[in-house]
Structures are given as structure tokens and as C-alpha cells.
Amino acid sequence: MFKVINKIEKGYELNVTLVFEDQVKICEYASAQNKELIEKLMKKKEFTGKKGEVLKVEFLEGTYLISMIFVGMGKEESFNLDIYREVMFDVLSKEKGTVLISSENEALLDYNVLGEIASNINYSFDTFKEKKDEVLNIELFIPGEEKDFSETVFLGEATDIARDLVDQPANIINPITLSEKAMELGKEYGFEVEVLDEKEIEKLGMNLLLAVGKASITKPRLIVMRYLNGKDNDEKIGLIGKGLTYDTGGLCIKPADSMFEMKSDMAGAASVIGAMCAIAKGKLEKNVIAVVPACENAINGNAYRPGDIIKSMNGKSVEIINTDAEGRLALADAITYAIRNEKVTEVVDLATLTGAILVALGNITTGVFSNSDEKYAMLERSSKLYGEKVWRMPIYDEYSELLKSTVADIKHTGGRMGGSITAAKFLESFVEGLPWIHMDIAGTAFNSGIKWFKKGATGVAVKALYSYVKNR
Ligand code: BES
Ligand code: MN
Ligand code: ZN
Image (tube, rainbow, N blue to C red; front, side, top):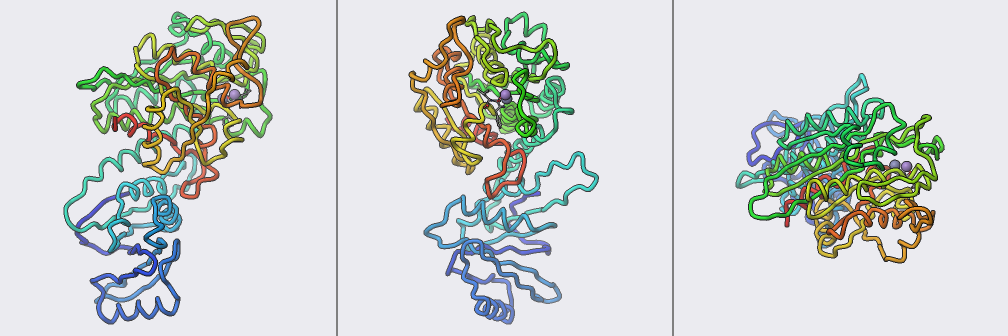
């Protein structure tokens, strides 16, 4: 699928040459005659290498028919990796077979980003289709020393794991099958997985999680993943992922159009599971605990109701206002479990939590909430490495006023205005003062907007979490 090579030893279906605007150089190995041909063609077509500009040439080199495209990246001064991602995704999405990529300019040989693009293009949710999509093999030519490109390959793989879990529909992925997948992945990648069933969840007093999941035929599971490989630090990073395998809205049922995509309501869980695979594969010397409250927000006579008052694992009583605000309930108990039973020293949670974050930031940017400037800065850096956009949202204490209940310690929704913020404030009230990051990925887990990404699940934050854990 993706390879970096330092010797060209075979023919390719297509040779892709990347150039900056007004710096077009023609490959060394072409004969004098072919160079002339290419130069003439470039003149005739006025090819200068503007951003996204493509020139196709075909010529005989000895007995070989060479197919080549020159791809423009625009001016070197205004180049950035977002441009690279956009142009390369666009150009390579149209190709099949095995292509060779080369450039005279080192900046255009970013093998990490190209590996990312290769796996992005090749990801396809075709489990249920008779006709499978063809793969594109990308080989990148970098002369000189051999490059170790294994990290970009396994990060792509881990992202695909998350994307596939999200794309799989809810008749396949339920709390039980999601747990089984996590166990399989733990064995394959090398992290420990423990799954607590409904009885154990009840014993632990995780009544919020139980309430959300109790109307489903497949009852809640708590998936606990442990990767303890820290050498000289006592940090234990807690990753928590919302694992709603389906969200009907419960008794406060969603309209059909909004329900349609709700198989993706376990995208936080999927990203956390994918990140654990990458962390273990990269043999990071860190301690990481991932916790996924897996459940389905369904409807039957046993469903929890608006007006119910439920005691959380943490001890706080919660007044239920709207059964469609289920994610924060499942997460609250998972956070308490991670802090009290697994002794994590910081909490990073990921959740497709609110429609309001879509209203605020659309499909492009993940809304991030944090009580720690330092941790937020680290996460922002990690996300940017992979072209993922994040934006910090406010968590001023005034917003907590909106969660005051007259009958319980707290209510779980604060109304339509600032809906993503009150959701975050609810979660914050369960983190017991630990450093905490909350990523609301409701807009970014499922793509319709980003130019260099396929439609469907994105595997958002898998790579960012890996690098957040690695680079500290
Ligand atoms: N899973 C949804 C949020 C969501 C919306 C994710 C759109 C992806 C796309 C969440 O459980 C939800 O329903 N939130 C409610 C909360 C409200 C009732 C306070 C919402 O945002 O409308
Ligand atoms: Mn909901
Ligand atoms: Zn939900």
C-alpha cells in the first residue's frame, strides 16, 4: 500500500512528479529527446506548477512506455502541509495500481504525510459490498539513506481500525460485539483488555451507565484497556471514549433524519481503541488506561425517563432532563471509574457529544475543552501534526449555573444555548480536579466537509492521541 524506496528497480503504472510553481525540473533519467518533448508540452499547455495543476505526458524511454504526471503544488513560499494533503488526495484518489512518486524538492517528499494520505485513500468500508474497491499502491522515491516509515504505516492502520468500527452499523456493533473486538485487538496489538458486564457495572454503582443502556437487548459493558509500559514516570493517562453503539435518543426520541447517522455515536470509543493499538504497536514507554462505557440508547418499557433521579458512581445524584443527552451520563461514570479504580492521573475524553458543537464549528474543527493550558497546548500540537483542526472552547464557571437542579445535586442538561459548554461543564464536575481534556467530535468523526478526506468515518484523533501520549 505504501512504501518508501531509495532505488527504482521496476516500472510503474504511473510516475508522479511533484513540483513547485515556476521551479519545474524534468527528471534526470529522461533522454534528451524526451526532455525536449516534455518541455514543449509544458510550454504549449502553459504548465507552471500552480497549486493542483496536473500535466500528463507519455513517452517511450527505450522500449518502455512511461506515463507521467507533473503535479503542481503552487509557490514554494506559500506551501504548507494542508495544501500537500489536499492536492495529493485529489490527484491520487483518481489512480489505481502502483504509482511512483518523486520530486527534486525535499519538502515535497514528506513520507509521514504521504503515508497518511495513502492509507486514507485506500480505506474503504466495503465489508458488505460484493464489488470491493481496488487498492492503490504508492511508492515514494527518496534517494539516499533508507527511511523508517513504519510509524506512518501503523498509524494509518490504527486509524482504519477506528474508521471501520464507526462505519460498521449497529446491527453488527453493539456493546457486546464492541467488547469482543476490543479483546481481539488487545491480543493482536499487545494491551490488556478487561470487560465488565452489567452485573459488575451494577456492583460498582455505575447507575448512570446502567440507566442509559437498560432499554437495549444488549446490556452495557465497561471496556477497560491497560497498557502499562511506563519506565520512569508515574503518569497514568486515562483515555475515555463515548461508546454509544446506537443513539435513538431514548424516550426523547430523535427525528428520523437525525437518527440516521447514530451508528457513529461510538466514534469516541473507536478512536480510543485505535489509539491504544497505535500506542502498543509503537511500544511507547508510557502508562495508558482506556475506558469505554459501551451501551445502546434504546427504547422499551424499561427505558430511563426525563424526571428520573439517578445516583452516579461518584455519589452525586443526577436529575434526568432529556434522555437524548445520554453520552455525558455514560461518560461521567466511566470517568469516575478511571479515576477511582484505575488511578489515572489525567483524563482525556472523546465523545460525539453534542449537536451544538456542529452548529458552532461545523464538520471541520473539533471543539476542545480543558482545565489545563499546558495539556491543551500539547493536544493542539499533536493534532496539528496530522492536519486535524482543534479549537479551544470556554468553560467559565458561570455556565455551571445552568446545571443547578432543585431536586438533585446536578441536572444533566442546561438548555439549547451554549449546549456544548454545559455538556462539558457536566463532565468537568466528575473529574475531581485532575487535568482534563474533553474533545467534542460530533462534527469531525463523520466526514462531509474536509477536502482531503473520504466521506464516512474519519478516525479523528487516533494519531493525535498517539502523539499526545508519545511526545511528553
Ligand atoms: N449523539 C448525540 C450528539 C450528536 C449529534 C452526534 C449529531 C453526532 C451528530 C448526543 O447524544 C445528543 O443527542 N445530544 C443532544 C443533547 C441535548 C438533548 C441536550 C443534542 O445535541 O441535541
Ligand atoms: Mn443523544
Ligand atoms: Zn449520543
